[in-house]
Amino acid sequence: MRIVQIIDSLEVGGAERMAINFANALSNEINFSGLVATRKEGDLKSKIENNVNYFFLNRKSTVDINAVFRLKAYCKKNDVEILQPHSSSYFIAILVKVLYPKIQIIWHDHNGLSQFLSSQKWVLLKISSFFSKVLLR
Image 1 (tube, rainbow, N blue to C red):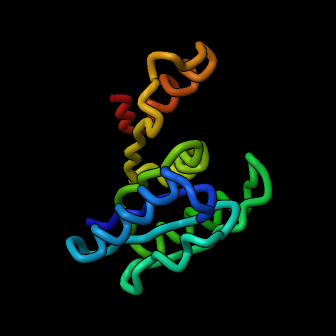
Image 2 (cartoon, rainbow, N blue to C red):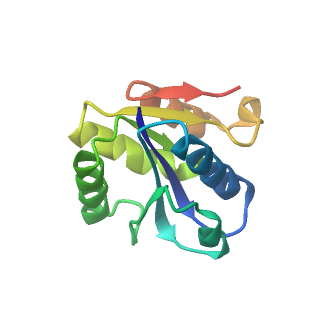
């Protein structure tokens, strides 16, 4: 199995820590464990273990087409099978999936308050679920 965790930044936070913990734990269990920080590096970068393949995407905006193509190229180069975006990183993962259909996406709610999401966010999640596995609880 070849999995990449995607997170917006590596600043100190719960979702960021979870992404790193997943990448570190999987690196000893599967063929390839990667971690992609899309927007910003931070203090948690030092917590990434040496056997995790780390890539900083340096995404400049919400719809940074160049970043989408760089992430797709990273996935192809490393034969990535699954993307696991954390928090709002699911949007870039969906764009990669559109360009690279063989990749699978697993996304889950970190907040645990999915029943309180606005109707707009629910619509986005429902549309995204056509491209991914969305786990809300």
